Length: 192
Image 1 (cartoon, rainbow, N blue to C red):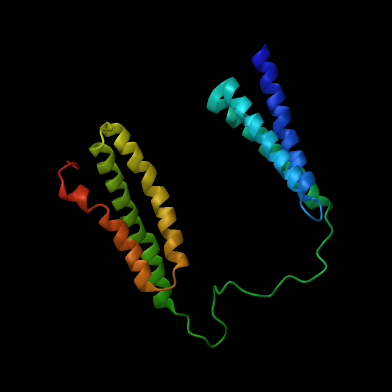
Image 2 (image 1 turned 90 degrees about the vertical axis):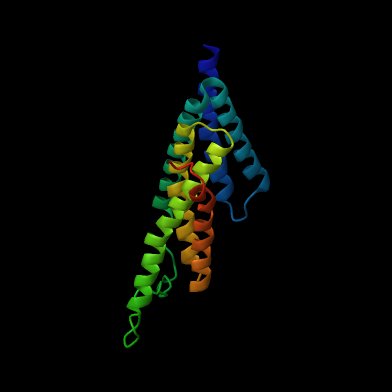
């Protein structure tokens, strides 16, 4: 029973933390004290959730906090007045202006670099991670799981880095560095 009461208090604390943070952020100037209080309450609530039910408790408390944040932000969005100024008319550069070249070759090259070459580089990072895990004594199953974790994460990070880099040389260098990490694993026979 005491653990249930602690978990109930932690749930109430997570919801109260969201309310305190919203109160702080709704002010014309954010209050450092209210911000710190809100985050501290949330941290203490999550710690109590962990003490009561481990990762499951933190997950449930996170759901309560996210639900409270959704309600608070939805209410704020619903009641906020419309903007008084027109939105900017700038464009993201998706399509060229009339008369400008489409640059289809460059767009296709960027797509191929990000998607295909990025995936190859991410798989290379996964192979390097698997090899390194086996090298330090992890079991084959754990090494495989690490590799399967690194590939999508690495692909996401590589895609971000490539798309934020304007120079093709730097893009190729980023991919080459990622692919080079797999050379030791390919040179050894740990993949067999």
